[in-house]
Amino acid sequence: MAAQKDQQKDAEAEGLSATTLLPKLIPSGVGREWLERRRATIRPWGTFVDQHRFSRPRNLGELCQRLVRNVEYYQSNYVFVFLGLILYCVVTSPMLLVALAVFFGACYILYLRTLQSKLVLFGREVSPAHQYALAGGVSFPFFWLAGAGSAVFWVLGATLVVIGSHAAFHQIEPADGEELQMEPV
Image 1: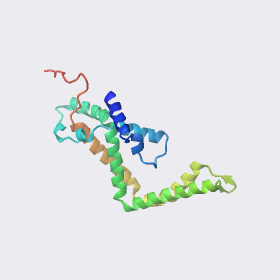
Image 2: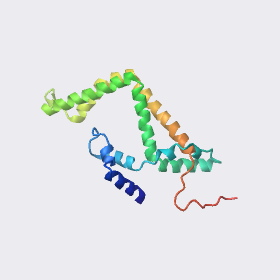
Image 3: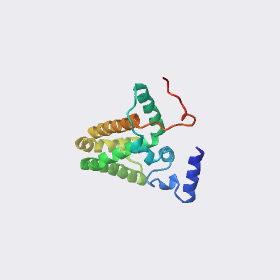
Image 4: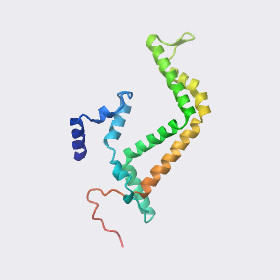
């Protein structure tokens, strides 16, 4: 824990804190704080993908122990693997890119419209939640044509396979005081 704080202080001294590395498009708030915590607790990618650290578990007990401990230890790395798979899915599907552009375009138009004046339909003021629901309704046919449902399930399945395989076959990182444990005979 103290080593992580020292690394963070060193990075801040060099002008590379986690807050400066985050995209400016992410507004400050709960989401940005969560992403900052994920980036601060990320484990080194070298140890994450080290081929010498992969082996077959000896039994079901060791498999379960590896799954639990590796998911806890590499949680932030797994979040970024998940985000990378989402990015891959979106980039490789042009129609999904169009659907996302329609959705975010509709949201942006509604945002600009609310800056000028309140949106009124049939004599009633429309709340921001209803406006974004309207943007979702307008873009829904595009998402349906793009196969967004299958893309979501592909990302979830690929994430489970990649993370599950890594967690099951990657040897557990030794915690403090566990290096000298004896195996029962």
